[in-house]
Image (cartoon, rainbow, N blue to C red; front, side, top):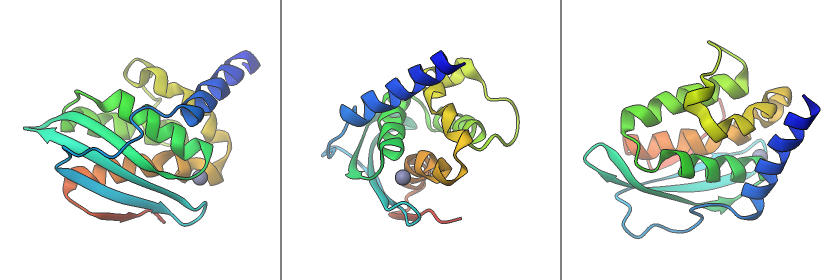
Length: 149
Ligand code: ZN
């Protein structure tokens, strides 16, 4: 288990150091800003939606390593997915990091399972889920997502 944890940490550190899709997306037709007042994380998620498919997705912002790595992995995982698939993945990620609900589906989560270690740090769960709530807000046409539930 400690090897696995180390691997997870490496994945998170790697995404924090070299975030994927970390840019403004000029072709975006959906956009939302998310704030996590508890930690100070701020993320802007850009989505180019074509019909109901996420054709392109990118993000900008600043925050802790977990929020940045989660956003980076989210954009990598959601490109080419439908809104329904994005919603399903959102549910899996939330279940994984909160430890609530059904056992997470590791096949569906793929590399996102690297975020599962966050479960052991309840005050960091919102850091991991902020980009996902923001993405969801963008798809729903919400411009401002203050995540403080
Ligand atoms: Zn944070």
